[in-house]
Amino acid sequence: MQEPRYRKFYIDWWRIKKSTVYGFLFVLGFLLISVGSVWFLVKSGWIAIGKDELNFPANAARVLSFEGDVRIIRASTRSSEKVTGRTFVLAGDTIQTGADGRAEILMIDGSTLWIRPNSTVIIRDNSSVMGGTNVRVNLGGGQINVRTEDQSEASQNIVEVRDSQNRLFAQTEASFNINQKLGTGEIRISRGSVETTIGDERIIIQANEFASIGNGRITAKEKLLQPPKLLSPAALEQILANSEGKADVTFRWQEIDDAAGVYDFQVSVSPFFVPEAVIKESEGLRTTDFVLASLNFGTYYWRVRATSSSGQMSEWSEPWRFTVVKREESKLLKVTDWKVENLGGGVYRISARTEPGATVRIMGRETFARNDGLFTLQIRTFSDEIKVEILNESGLSSEYLFSLTKGKVLN
Image (cartoon, rainbow, N blue to C red; front, side, top):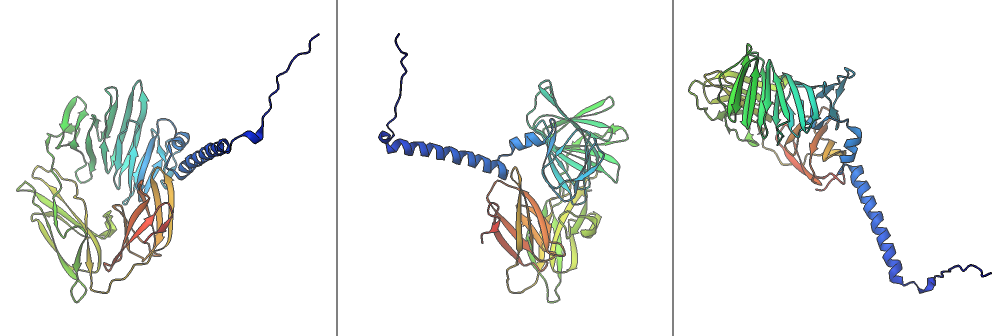
C-alpha cells in the first residue's frame, strides 16, 4: 500500500529581502498612525458625529451655542437644567433665557432658531414623518429669530405667536416677538415669506413686510421699519476725557423715512442692556441726537430704535461700543490662569483671570471680568488660534493671540 504524500513547504528566512521587511513595517506604521489620528480627532471633538448620535435621542433639536443664563425645563421630569455645554431639546421641553441669555438651536429640518434674552420658547414638535419634517415652536415671551433652508412640500415649520399660526416657507428669515407694552405679537420678514393664520383669517407676509397680532386679528401689512443707522460716536471710538476726568458725549443717528417718527435711546455699561446696567434711557425723542454729559472713564454701549406714525416699532439697532479714556502711558493688561475646554463640534469654553471689571472680547462675543478678575466666554470656531482683546475701565486695551490646541498665549 502506497503511503499518503504530504506537501511540505519550507521558507528560507535568510532569503527574504530587506525591502520586503521595510515595506511591511511601513504599512503597519501607517495603519497605526491612521487609527491614532482618528481616535485623537474623535476624542478632541473635531469629529463629533458619532458621539452626537450616541448621546442625543432621535428627533432631538441641538443647542449649537449659548451664552449667559439659558435653562431647559424638561417635559419628562419638569426639572430645570442650566445649559453649560452641548445638549439637546425634545418636544415638550421649554427653553428660557435670562437678561443676558442667548441660545442657537438647530432643528430637525435644518432650520436655525435664535432665542433672544428674556425669552420663553416651548418646542411643540421636532420630528420627521413620511419624507417630510414637522417643526413647531411656541413663543411665550421675548423674541426669536428663525431661518429656514430648503424644505420639501411635506415639511412644515410653524411658529405660534399669541393666537396665530405662522408657517415659514423655504429660504425664509423672520423675527417674532411679544410687545410687552401693547400686548401684541409682532412679525418681521427680512427674506422669504410666512403664511399667518388666525381662525379663518389668513395672509401671506412677504420679505420686508411687518404685521402685528392682537385682539384675535391680524393688522394690515406694512413696509418693514428698519432700525435707525447709528452715526456717532462710532463703533470702538475712544473719547478723551477732560482735565476733570469726564466727557460730554453727543450721540447722533440717521432719521427714518417718517416725519412723525419718534426714537427710543439707551446707553449701558453692558452689551446685553440688562436693566441694572442701563445708565441712561429716553423714550419718544423727536430729534436724531442726544447729549449725555459728564461720563466717567469706562466702556459704554448705545443703541436706538424707532416708532413710525402707524405705531410700528423697529428692532433695536446693533449696539455700538465706545470708551471714555484718559491720558496715561500705555501698559499691558495682565491675563493669567488661562484655561480652554473643548466641548466638541468647534465649541470652546475659555476662562482666565484679569483686572476686575475689564471687558473681554473674542470673535465678536463679549463678557466682563468678575470682582475676582475671573471671566469665562464660550465661542464657536474651527480655527486653531483666536485673538483675545482685554479692555479695562480706563480705556486701556491689550490683545493676545491664543492657541486653542496648545491652551496658551502665543504672543
